[in-house]
Length: 183
Image 1 (spheres, rainbow, N blue to C red):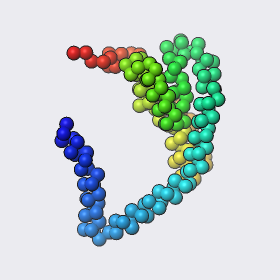
Image 2 (cartoon, rainbow, N blue to C red):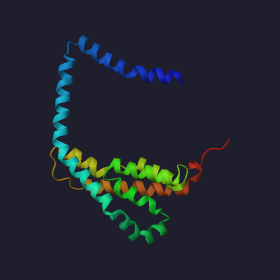
Image 3 (cartoon, rainbow, N blue to C red):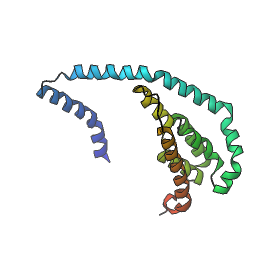
Image 4 (cartoon, helix red, strand yellow):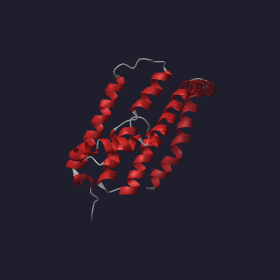
């Protein structure tokens, strides 16, 4: 275990030294390239900033409006039939929109239900098998000025839905994998 700690301490300085020596060897101005990259990164950040602000405001309004609870109550008969816990619905609805909001919801679920509970395990598996689809599409398409995303959103949301359904199936059908090991 100590060797891993030593390696993790020296990796970043070692990478920086390798880059600096390579630049010296090939007579490349590493600092100028770094400054150009930082400038480009700042320009991209300024381009996508309005999109990010809009997404964060929309997520805040969605969470505080009570619509998630309303949707959960509305579809609860279907959820019972599918053996899908109602506590997971806000996570499933917000995961495609925001990573930080879905992480907060998953953390709340795990705190309330426990890390070894069915609901806690399902929340963790959903977090690992889905993506912040709308956020990613919004950021990438706005950074390269794509206005028409065509079928990308539909396909990506279908992949998220597939991830949620498969997560439910796996956690239901393979409980032995998720039980804590006992000596």
